[in-house]
Image 1 (cartoon, rainbow, N blue to C red):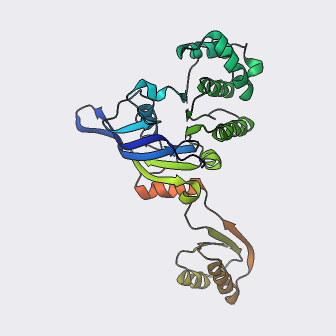
Image 2 (cartoon, rainbow, N blue to C red):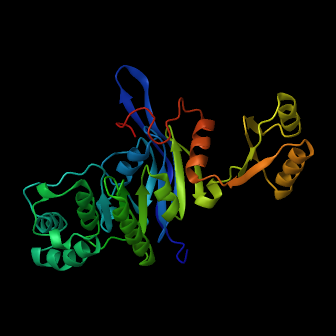
Image 3 (tube, rainbow, N blue to C red):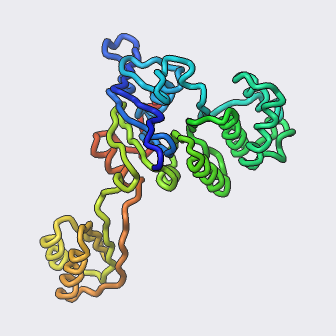
Amino acid sequence: MGNSEISIKVNNLSKTYKSGFSGDGVKALVDVSLDINQGEIFGLLGPNGAGKTTLLKILLGSLQPTSGTALINGIDIGRPEARGKTGFLPENHRFPSYLTGMQMMVVFGGMSGMTAREVITEATPLLDLVGMLKWQNTQIKKYSKGMMQRLGLAQALLNDPDLIFLDEPTDGVDPIGRHEIRNILLELKNRGKTVFLNSHLLSEVESISDRVAILDRGKLLKVGPVSGLTQTKPEVTITISTITADKQNVITDQYPTAQVTGSRVVAPFTEPSEVNSLIDLLRANGIDILTITQVTPSLEDSFVSLIKGSGVGGVGGVGGGTGGEHE
């Protein structure tokens, strides 16, 4: 990764929300520990209610942990200077609709101590970077959701941060815009910036993240490179001629993990020799093979499998869960 310095260090972080008359409360985070390296794109995944937003709020200083510690660039998150060189694009952000894009940048830059002249100097190339320069003098009330996201990303980069927190950065952005934003994030990484990405679009996280973490019900299930999280065995799907029940039993007797439904055989495998043996078995029993397709599990497949294994009821992928308040 070029630079092994730690940008974010989280140690045994826990957060419990008090809930009415319940003595135990709601455990939003439970002993979460992880390191995020400088200069990497780090993706955070989990179903609704997993604790993603709670972790983000704690790191940003808007929420106090119940126990545990966290450092940003070696500075305790309890100190305001820990966030001196950070940028943040929140989910469902709201900008004053009567301002123009550039006016909004001046307002936000002023909050961080920049003069209007400094903001305009810095904001002009940023608005150009996100494709919003020609709209800089248009009132925000005329912006689409995608344009709002682009403006929000420019705002998050205004103070040239070393660490950028992005909560659903491509929400409402069209496919071309998502592609452009992904390229921007990769360029930020090339400049040595650290990007902390929270997104429900698993394909997006998979395509650009160096590492990902999966949270479920406040607990950290797994952390690592995407390739290390997609360890579910690949499968082969073989389309065959219709077979009798006897021949179906022959297949499942020798390959208990195979699923035979109608004219399809789906079987996981570890070695190519296992596929060859299955093909030989089909041929030996006079079963015609029409097509053979290998399917390699995606991050989404592995994510769903991991969450199911952790015991979430009725996995809705990233959409199911216990509600957004303690997400």
